[in-house]
Length: 76
Length: 336
Image 1: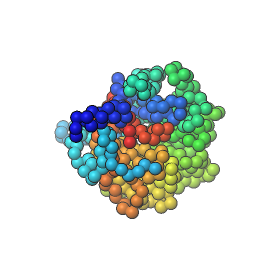
Image 2 (image 1 turned 90 degrees about the vertical axis):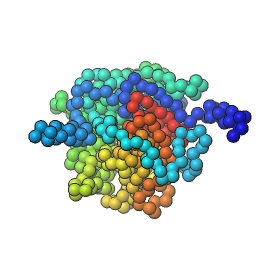
Image 3 (image 1 turned 90 degrees about the horizontal axis):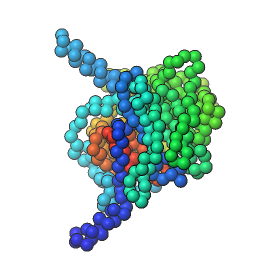
Image 4 (image 1 turned 60 degrees about the vertical axis):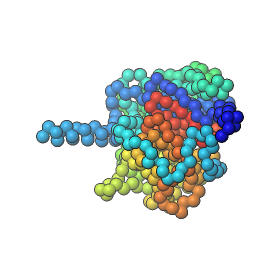
């Protein structure tokens, strides 16, 4: 690729960016795109910060019971 | 329709060619163990929701505002208002279903907290919900208490509550119209309901594990362009199951391209035969389902490699060229 076509390619890429990143202060879980035509590129994001687990989903529950089982077998 | 094509130069996506998944190191499986079906998990009001918008001049995301949320949100949805004529509403689930009103894209206030349990202070966490696209006054929520509730938000009350599954319900999705919806849950079944005849449901699919039992189904997405098709995710599975409601019991296709468990899925809003999936193998994959002759599809048409496990994925309905993913603390939007 010649220098000029490389330059043209980079300029085109800058004009038509393909990827944008937003960094939140917390782990993101919930997320959704706004649908309204007057609010393009608008999203809502929700944090996932847990301190006291009231309800565990099955994946986490199984992980905990697995580690508990390992502890028990190690103790025995 | 999304044409089958090669990824453009500069595109974040790689063209699928069967090697997807093999290039990545294996990751700690439990790193995001409690994310895919996140439920009410914290006692203090330390969680929050932010509204962000891409400034197309500066190419930067701008923080428009937000609010505190008790417990992490298990799902967030904007009102499916394609005209922009209705109020600017946002819904969240966690301990309850809440509606939030956004004014001038800046200030957000709680519009309503919807609770159908009048007798006790105990609340069963809501695992997910869907907002009916055809009638935005209807929202359906799923709960760990085995029930689904259909809400009428013009009256801010429940229309009906039904015992949908034998165990926890993890997700709910409306079909293209107003009346039909389906749910999945810990009992491993996909059940279809019709609001005009709630006395019975139709089991579309039941998962089976190696021991002859069932595996929980954690996510469900209904193809809005061709409502004969549904997609569902099995807990801890790297496969995606595609179902045809006209042919119950057996999957129409199985997407077998992720190397770790799949956490999220979204049908293309503008094409009946494209779906995007994302998972713990850091990948977001786009699949072409236009020819379903083969039962097992291993090659996606496009693959994107994120920096870490992808927990969330949404395909923009208003701008169908764009898919959004979340991994760790990052939100990324990708042009398809």
